[in-house]
Image 1 (tube, rainbow, N blue to C red):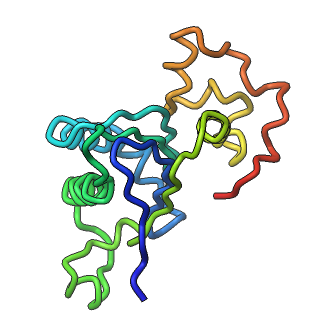
Image 2: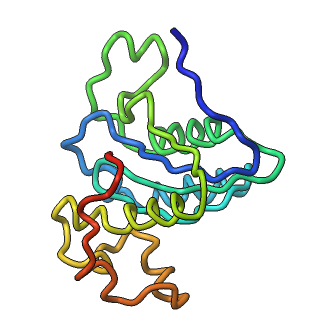
Length: 175
């Protein structure tokens, strides 16, 4: 059975992308490389990163694609492969991964969700920004350095104490 993804040009999507080994900390250990991969792909294949959080072993993001484009899959492939190529080769690569020319850095699949409306969009942004607190990395969302929350605070959309007293732990969707 072939997995089918939604493909709506110009839409906004929520993503969860994981490392294969969830005990690794490659994403934050190599944050400059990851940022460069995003920047390079965005220059060649434009899209907007509406919200994002990078945790040590996974990330969440909301992207909005150009009006005539629905190919988020190609963008993720380019980002993931560029990041993998930029890392030193220290991992064990299984035979099945060698055949497919994979490094075994990323999980093959990722989660995507087509954003349905403004409320869905807002809830996913909250989920993204609260994620470092949920995972116990920080007590306040604004204390996590690898998050778009800082852009939201800087633009006056939320305050520095966002999420401190709010009950965001019971989000209507999982990871």
